[in-house]
Image 1: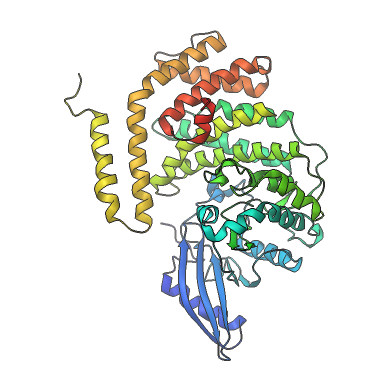
Image 2 (image 1 turned 135 degrees about the horizontal axis):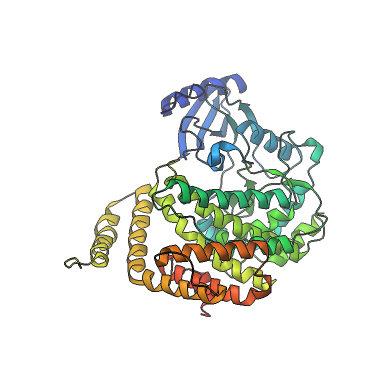
Length: 361
Length: 131
C-alpha cells in the first residue's frame, strides 16, 4: 500500500463531514442533508446531497471526486500516466463552467477543490434530475417521446459545443487532432501486447490483424483540413441525463480536448452505444440524417458523412482497444476485477464490425 | 492419459448451471451482474474447450496459405505467433495492400471462429455469417 498523503483513503463518513464543511463555505447559511454515495468507481466517485438553507431553500447537488487512495486505475494508469489525455477534476470543472457560460446543456459548477485538498480533487455541481442509464432510456415507455427527438437534439447540442470560443477554454486542455489520437491508441495496443509478452506467464504478445487493417485504413482515409475546436470526447448514450422531453444535461467532461468536432458525431454512432437497437445507429435512438440536420440547422459546419464514418471507424477501434485495456488492468494488477478480465474477450466484437465498416467505405 | 469423467466441459457446465439456477435468484444489487458475468465466463471456457483446437488449426492453415510458409516453431502455438507477427507487421507496412481481399477473408474467418467461442450471440457476428 502506498502512503498517499493527499487523500489517505477517507472513509465515507469522513468524506461526508468534509463535504459539509466545504459546502458551508460556498453556500448561504444552512446544512448538508441526504449525503449519499451514488457510485464508487476505483478512480471516480459520485456523491449526491442537498443543501438546506436556513431560509428554507433546498438545492440538489452532486460531488464528483477522485478517491486518490487507490493508485491510478483509469487510462491514466497506463505506463504510470505518461500518455494520458483525461482531465483532472479542476480542469474538468473549469471546462464545464466555460460550456455553461456559453449556454451549453451542462450542470452549473458551484466550486472545485484542488488535488492536494484533504477531500482530493473534486467539484460540486447542480444535480439535474432524470434518467442516465442508456438501456432504460432506449426501452422505457416514459422516454418514447424523447427518443424521437434525441438524434436531432444531439446535433444541436454538438453544434453549440463545437462553436465555443477556443480562447475561453482551459489553457491546459490537450490538443488532440486526429494524428496524435491515432498514435495514442497505437501505443496503447502495442504496449498492452508487449506487456503480455514480457510480463505474464503466458509470455506471448496479442495479435489483432483487424486492428492493423483498421490503422492502415485510417492512414489512407484521413480527413483533410479539419477545423480545430472543442470536442467533448465521450458524447454518447450513458452520459446524457434524459427526461421525457429529451436530453437535459451532458455529463462526464474528463475526455474533453481540442480537435475535430466530427469525432463527437462519429463516436455517438459507434455500435457499442446502441445497446442492441441496431436499426438506430445514432446512440440506439435515431438516424444519422436527423443528427446531421440538427447539427447544420444549429449553425454547425456542413457535415460530410464520409468524415463522420471515418470517426465511427476510429471510435470502434478505440472501443476495441479499450476492451483489451480493461483486461490488461486486471492482468497487470492495477485493479482486482474478474469482470474486467472478461471484457478482453469482447475486443473481437469490434474487430468483426471494423471489417464491415472499412469494407463499406 | 485422459482424466475420468466428468470432463472439464461437463464440470464447468455443472458449475454454470448452479450459478444461474441456484445462486443468481438469491442475489441482489451489484452481485447479480457479477454472477451473470461469472456464468458467462464459464460458458466461454466450455466453448473454447470444444472449439478452440479446430479454430487454432484453421487459423494456422489460413496463415500458411496466405503467407506461403510453414511458420517457425516446434509447436503450432509458436508457429501461430510467428505467422501472426508477420501478418500484422506486413499489414502495418503496407506490404499486403495488394492482397487486401485475401487478407480480409482470412481475418474474417478467424474472427468468426473467435466469436463462436467468445460471444456467438453477438449481432455483428450473426451479420457476418449472413444471417
